[in-house]
Image 1 (cartoon, rainbow, N blue to C red):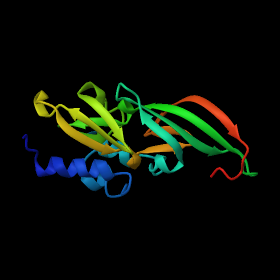
Image 2: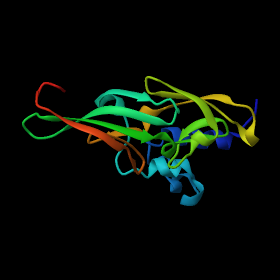
Image 3: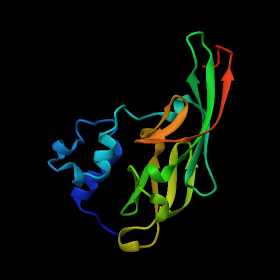
Image 4: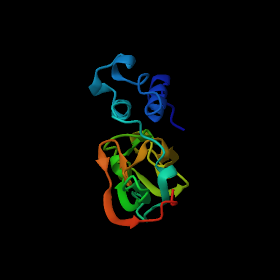
Length: 176
C-alpha cells in the first residue's frame, strides 16, 4: 500500500472539511499562496456554506456512468406556501477529484478519468480509483452531502450549477 506524508494527509483532511471550517482552511491560514492550496482553496472560497442537499431532496441517484448525480429537490415558489419540484443533474467530475487514490471535494476535480465502478449509497460516493503513479485501483469514498448543495431546487457544487431537467409547481402547502 502506498504511503503518504503527514503533510499530504493533513491537506487532504482539510480539503474534506473545508466547508465546515472555512477560516481554518484558508490559504493564509495554511501559510501558502492561493495557487498552492488546490482543493482546499476551492472548498474554502465558497460564498455560502455548502451542505446537505439530501435534506431538501425527495430523491437522488447516480447514473450508470458513475459520474452524473440526478436529484429531485424542492424550492419555495412564493409566500403562500407553494412549492416548485425541480429535477436536475450534476456532473460530479466538476465536484470531486482523485488525490492519490482518495476521493476529495475539488472544483473541476475530474475524478472520472482515474476512477471506475462508482456507486452511491445514501450520500456516499464509492469508486475504485488509481493511486500514485497509476497504481492499481483502491476503494475510495467521499460524502457528497458535505459539499453538494441544493440551490433553489437545483443541485450544485462550488461554482457549478446542475442542469435543470424539469420543473413542476406543487400547490399543496403541506409538502415540506
